[in-house]
Image (cartoon, rainbow, N blue to C red; front, side, top):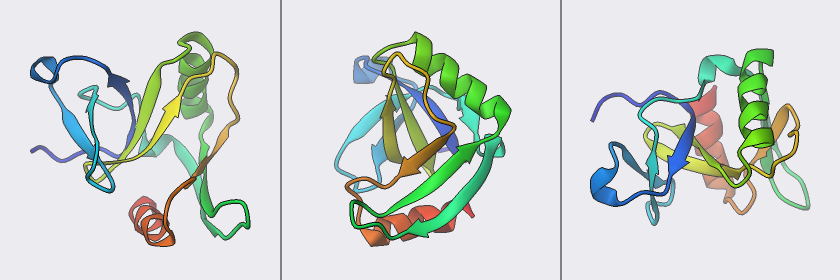
Length: 126
């Protein structure tokens, strides 16, 4: 498999034989069909926080550059129900469903994740 570019990929709900690129979730339990190339690359991540230990849920804050945010905002605002996957090292570490409204520039990564998974993600994003 070719080297995977870290970034946000559009997710397609199509038959497996019609999909060009299948990737698995970080836990290896679920497969997703993603676009061949990222919509938003890691170069469009302005900052990645350290791991924030929060009583509600531990997470990492990922902030987009203005260019990355414009792309994310366009999908989120105009394609209600569309899904984007955050891919790191050929693993899908998060799914983000468009809600048809303007999103925030900073995303929280980590809901329902173990601290070990957050550490892996943080290590690969920095």
